[in-house]
Amino acid sequence: DQQVKQNSPSLSVQEGRISILNCDYTNSMFDYFLWYKKYPAEGPTFLISISSIKDKNEDGRFTVFLNKSAKHLSLHIVPSQPGDSAVYFCAASELGNTNAGKSTFGDGTTLTVKP
Amino acid sequence: NAGVTQTPKFQVLKTGQSMTLQCAQDMNHNSMYWYRQDPGMGLRLIYYSASEGTTDKGEVPNGYNVSRLNKREFSLRLESAAPSQTSVYFCASSPGQGNSPLHFGNGTRLTVT
Image: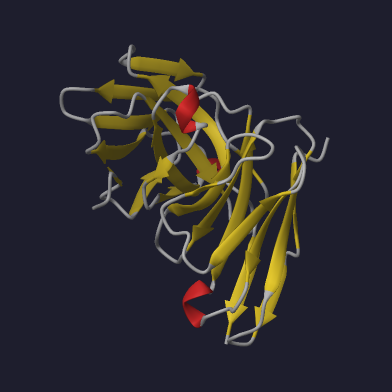
């Protein structure tokens, strides 16, 4: 039973346009959500996060939206650039010391931004 | 500042051989983690260490053991490697609070023949 799902394995967009990556979760105990970016032969790197008390968080070209009632979050990249081409992982965790920051990951979406 | 360092970068084992994957972080983080990533899949948690002196099983612990040697180092051991353990292994660390992102190493690509 996969608790974090990214239903689109791949996405291709034109440079300058918006990229929208989606993520769904099933565990209602998750209250902190993160997006990571991964280039080939490197480890994932943190991109942006959102806690469940918010519905939007913005950082430059990156915005994450959270819809708790639908258990859905999305990452918007505007404008998309060729350097954004990477695998994007959605992750979720439960706040609280007993969980030690463990995260559950989706399978990833490969974004290709065409010049 | 190196962050999270994993060794080796690549390894080929025969079925039944053993090996230890090493991980060290220099960020004074409390918590450390081992994940594996199989092709087309996300990262699955093998083991984690919430703090020095403690370790706990994650989602896929079978066939692995871990040691939190000190606050900096967290090793993953395969006692008898199997082809199903062919994967890319990532070590990560975090301060340990739930609202902190993970910092990952660059991975160890392991092939078991």
